[in-house]
Image: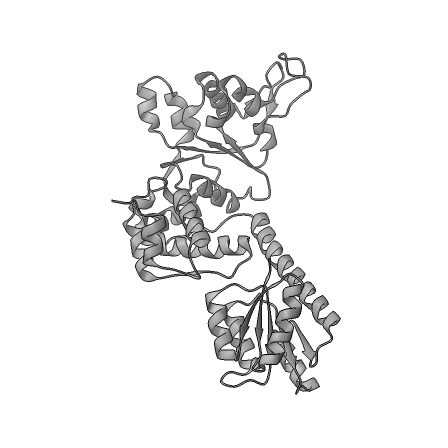
Length: 387
């Protein structure tokens, strides 16, 4: 059910509009002046606001300016019996969705409200789509380890040097790979990602190198592998420590010779691919245990970028939380929520075993369960473990 706020110093007008809009299925709140209206806007999300212009304390134009500062996307329809063309123009210039004279034509008012809500929905959807199609997410953080990673990326991205990204699950290894690709001379090509841990060992070779029709029972047609798909671009091999030894041998050949052979085929296919690998394992330990090839390790680790855990960079938590608040609230189509300093301090005390991924989930939980401002009590209730 959509929420509408009616702000008017005339009680009879508020009552009439409230009854009509309630009958139409809207949930209505009322305010007798602009000051009370601003207080309600800060406490609750509204889909549309109807606001008179001539009011005590804070008039409609001043309310419009302050409400737009709090939430630029909220549609505000100005209604006045004392208006002029100049007043209407001023209101629209300052961000009003529309201007309607008193007494309002109810049909026009209802249509305007519906159109305003449709616009709000489109604005929210557009913001989500823009973020989804953006090439790469921002690498957030000002801590020393993150600054070092950014500096390393700036140096190595323009080269074709292979990179091994290490770190725990959820620290953002994929983001490092995306930034390297974005800043490389291959940015115009494809960035092809393969999660080696998610593909069964018997299928990994077909996934990487492709297969010919009839090469095995279910091979009903030719398949182009990830190496060929990434030709001229970058191949990101995530969780490479989980790759089978057989597949490792073929990856090594591809890196050494720049050639691959499809499963079931006998033709060498040249590929021009930059490989970035990532792992949460200690690959040298895996080498000692005979589950990872030492020669492949040396081929992959021309440059090693270690991404620290969130517990090692807790100074970045306020910046990360702010980023997630903006993104997630935009995804939900609501005004950005704020978080108190004490709540941030509570988050910084938490043991982040799931790293950035866990932090994002926690921020989403707080946005859903908290009021307009996330406070210390919210963090204690919804994040920190009970003692």
